View (tube, rainbow, N blue to C red):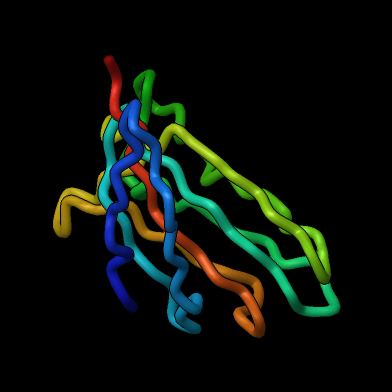
Amino acid sequence: MATLTTQVISRAGLTTPTFAAATGGGDAMQCGPGMHIEARNASGSPITVTMVVPAARTYEPNVAITSPTFSVPATTGVVRWGPVDAGTFQDPTTGLCTITYSGVTSLTVGAFNLQGP
């Protein structure tokens, strides 16, 4: 598992975003109100990305939160997803959000923090 480097997007913009190859065992990223992930799929099949919600996380007593997923379309698919807020996704041990993938062939990902005014 690799930790994705957070890239900051300010009012000045982000001229050259970078993407890393998705790791077979999953990846991790920082959490926060401006955090989001971008996934790019160049493989011939769609890939499902799961943003893992820690097992003990609930909003109401005895109501578990399901880990959300999104599908990245085949060949030229690009999906941006967020916010990756700490209240939902932060692992109590690592302090990060865990991300898993249904496949990693030709999948690249980046973690971005969209800063407010």
